[in-house]
Structure formats: C-alpha cells, structure tokens
Length: 251
Image 1 (cartoon, rainbow, N blue to C red):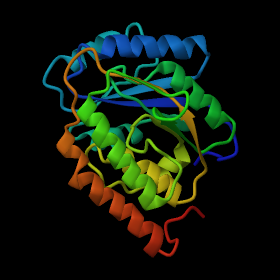
Image 2 (cartoon, rainbow, N blue to C red):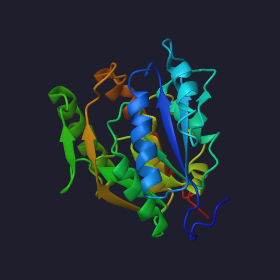
Image 3 (cartoon, one colour):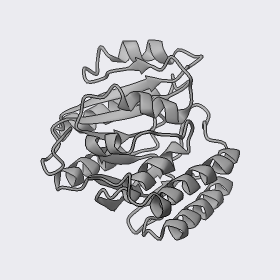
C-alpha cells in the first residue's frame, strides 16, 4: 500500500474501450505527447472490453510508437464499470486517472490532476460546470438529465461537488483499494467510486476541466442508464454513510 503522504511516483491511466478503433489512435497519441512533454512517469492501461471491431489490433500496432501503452483484454463479463475495475487490477502505479477513449477528456487536465495529487490530495475530481470549466457540443437532453442527476446527488450527500457523474477523476492507489468491493458493473461506477471515497473519509479537491463530444464512433452511455442503476448505487452508498456506523471508513 502506498504512503498517502508521499508524492506519487507512477501515474496509471485506466481507459475502458469498446469498439473504439477510430478514436484510440488520436486519443492515445495526444495523451502520450502531453505526458512526455510534462515529464510525467506513466503507463496507459487500455482495457479492451469485448470489442467487435479492430480495437485490439489497433492497440497492438500503437504499442510500437507508444512504449508506455499497456493494453489488456477483459475476458468478461463485460460492462463499463467492470472494465475499469479490470484495469485497476492490472495497474502498476501508485496513482490512477480514469479517462475516456473518445478524446472527450483533455490530457492537460490529467496533468493538472497529477500535480494536485502530488500536493497531497488523495482524490482529484474534475468539474465541467464550475468557473473555468468548459463543455463543447454536449447533447442538450443528456445535459439536462446530467444536471438533474448531479443536483440530486449533491443534495442527497450534502457535498459541494456538482459533477459527480463524470468518470474523469484521479485517485491515489490506496483509495482505489480502500473503496473495494465495487458493485457497479456499468456507468454507475462513475458515482460509486467518488461517493465511496468521500464517505470513507479520503481527502479530495475539485478543479475545473474541459469536455468535448466525441468525433468518432458512437457514445456507449444511454439516457436510460441514468435511471435505476444510478439510483441504486447512490442509495447503497448513502446507506453506508448513515447506517454502517463507520465500519468502512479509513482507519
């Protein structure tokens, strides 16, 4: 287990990917170039989550030009949340950031996460909706549902975080281990992980980030995913917060 007070030494990127043959090359090249320029020691763990296209072949080819790329295949069962947890199980770093394969997350923001973790924060949560944040081409219906869901979470947990549902967040490795086991198999892991980290007493900070809609492929998150699965995970963590008597808080 890493020392929570020591600066991290290796930054692991966990990136779930399903049928992302067109998005991965520009996404990974931009990320690698940014980390190389900023001299951030890193590895990029891309999890091929049951792709039906040439995603795995593309990843193998990219290894020739991106030496820090460490692709793995999730044999199943599949699902966005399961792919991320599979990536957690295969990372080597003492800090990790979850990023999307569609280039919606800015590499420069990942660098800022690394710096903030180095300042002593155990978790860094980005917000697209605070001063300094930016969104580009966000579908209107999804944006409306997103803001309602985040308002519900903010009120339910009485926290000053207005973008809990975004997957793009960074953690020290001991936080990832301290929040196990994970129940969410799909996109609802994006709320289970940060809410557990908060409820279990890990330190966190928020920084503005940018988000751009994908240029290739099809979005995997459907609006119906924002319903019962998210509600179940929110209530599960809420029950832990108020009824577990601190049994799961960090020691």
